[in-house]
Image (tube, rainbow, N blue to C red; front, top):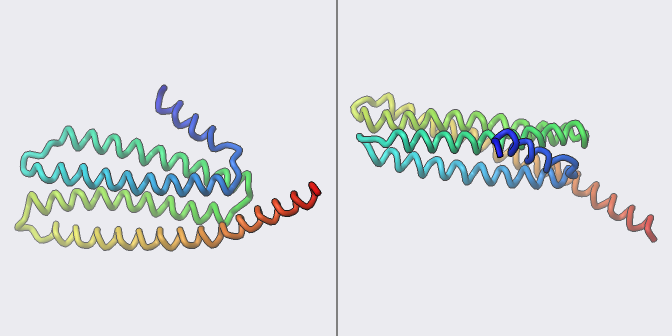
Length: 178
């Protein structure tokens, strides 16, 4: 099965889901992102431990696999955003998820820059600019993580109304069935 077919199958499996189920899938995908970052850091640390004889082919393979994983997660989340917006008319919820997606992209870009700065700091210990860049990027990533956490809280509160509406719909259905 090609990567394109796999992505198509995943998006097809998300079609027709309720807004609540789409949000559940979004939370699962966010968990997968966290796991992927952890694997990325572990692999990068192993790469750094090889200094000065870095195993670049191993690291390149890791980056390839991580990129594929993040790309798949992003495609699924973009599909979820579109479903929330177009089929469920949940503009506020889809806007929050879009903001999270944009911040996750920013976080990944900064993480890659941080890895380069960390390697440069090891390779050029006498040049303080790399250490300063590393410190600045760590702080910048923490700021992005803080923004993502705030958006996740906003999503929680915004989607509580959604869950309340579903509970009301279920009560109305039960009453109608009696």
